[in-house]
Amino acid sequence: MERASASNPVSMEDVAALAKRRGFIFQSSEIYGGIGGFYDYGPLGALLKRNVKNAWWRDMVELRDDVVAFDSSIIMHAQTWKASGHLEAFNDRLVDCKVCKHRFRADHLKSLEQCPDCGSKNSFTPERAFNLMLRTFVGPMEDSASMTYLRPETAQGMFVNFKNVYQTARKRPPFGIAQIGKAFRNEITPGNFTYRLREFEQAELEYFVPDDGNDLKRFEEWVQLRKAWYAKYGITAERLRFYELTAEERPHYAKAGVDVEYLFPWGWGELESIAHRGTYDLDAHMRVSGKDLRFYDEASKTHYTPLLIESSAGMDRTTLVVLVDAFERETATDPAGKQTERIVLHFHPQLAPLQAAVFSLARNKPELVQRARAIEEGLRPRFRTQYDEGNIGQLYRRQDEIGTPFCLTVDYETLADSALTVRDRDSMRQERVAVDRLETYLHERL
Ligand code: ATP
Image (cartoon, rainbow, N blue to C red; front, side, top):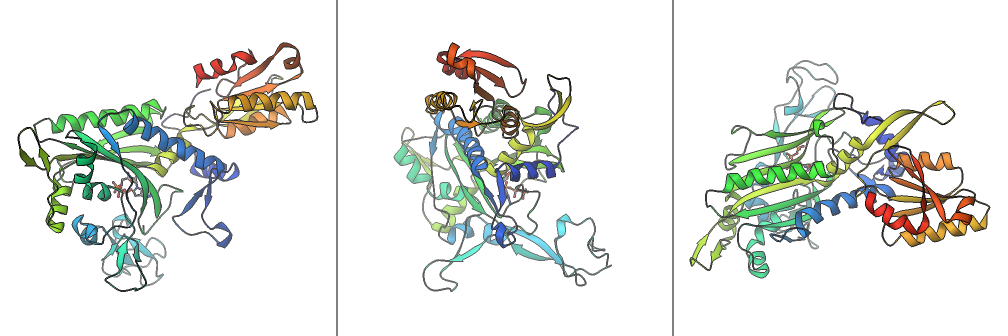
């Protein structure tokens, strides 16, 4: 029962097909033909993504006493984007093929001499900058004064509130501000399922540290912490890499940068970036707003601008990684010695949409149905559970495909011995467990 190895990644088509068939992810506005770069999470996908976000929030915010929670608005004052540099520099370089009229990101083309779609030579227009921010208007007038943007990242809301937060939360560097929220980018070539979206969610942590010579050490600690986080939730270590950006690859103000990358079926792709951004962001907002955002240190009676270590992770990309990494098509031998194929999602129990499914062996036996329903109801306050009934083979197959760690079956013997059959998703082993021991049993394993 080996997990697919780093060299044997699953196919994205298989994952997308399962995601649709079982209700994880649907194309947005599907009945109208869809809209590129937008997806909807179905009943199980919404649970999975929520569990991923909760895991991040629990570990990065709730279990730390040096990180505070935040939730800023998606639309901010337009000056925000002038200060952050997004108005000036958040651009992709675009070219159009004059023959087939297709548009490309210049940096995605192998050569600017030949169009990869129609094969025409020297058919590209000169490069031009395309800003990735989505525009909107606030209020009844649609003019330049009312124009603003949907945020392309959540971070700026935390920078402009730096002073509000440290004063009210009574924090002093080192401390962090964290939020999870939507961000929007008018990506030119969305694709690879939910990898590159135009509407997505980010989990960002802005960790402010004093300029005391320990900043690079603290940066390294954050990289290690994030590495441990992915390991905790069982992401295959061989399919993760922590790529250290060179000085040329980093923005000029950044002292260090690490991209967390996953080996997707199409190759390595970024899912998080960790960066030492110095004082760049607070300085920029102080310059444009004219307001003092420096930290006031009571002890030394001095003002200073703290350095920033940022961790910015995409929650849709992390959810996609969890899905891809858990996916396995395996061949097993059934009790009759026949080879069968099954698709199974080996989710970490904390991330699995459901943790235990309770079945009644028969649909038409009220005693069994009642007993199974009562057991499911009893477990519901403590675990994510579901009741189902019918053909056990089919029920197992369905729960394997949605990654439920345990299936509990109530059968005729249950009525006599008050025990039921617990079947483990990964090993497919079954054992009898007394109903009154179930809660402890599941607790120990989940
Ligand atoms: P890329 O190079 O893939 O465009 P980026 O370097 O621009 O990404 P950042 O600005 O560092 O990305 O954003 C931080 C995180 O936000 C990324 O690591 C990713 O997980 C997520 N993210 C960014 N753009 C998108 C997108 N279009 N769709 C989904 N997630 C995204």
